[in-house]
Length: 159
Image (cartoon, rainbow, N blue to C red; front, side, top):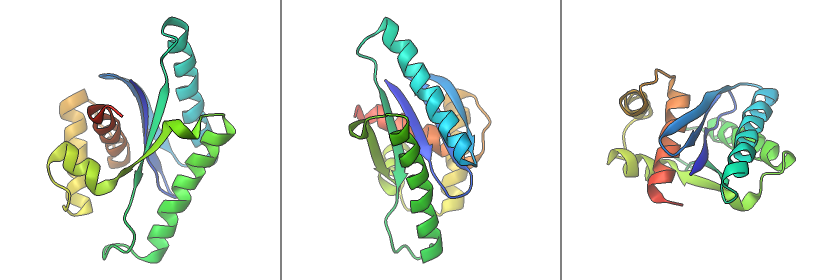
């Protein structure tokens, strides 16, 4: 399964493109051009795969959040939404079907992957970094690590 995982933010967003157990590309997107390039890579990879496997399809999974958490203020929540909106707009502009774009609730994917959902953000981010290293042998920042975790959770669910 080809999956583009996105840990979106108004600042740097982490992203990871995987196909089954293999990492195809990963990075951090700070500007709109970075987001467009990341999506362009994912769509080009999908096209390449489809030449050998016509049924290959790119799925996109982005983190979603519950509103009103004590640890977040309204400005943080607005920034998270705006960050996802930039990715969603870029996906639409590049022709990715909305039906193949899904959201993963933060607590749900963390519990599904780590068995815990209610850890502090700092603890959960450290866990994601360690998990990315243990599973793929890559040293990445917390945003990219969480994007990798999103792809693994999504594949595990078989969505």
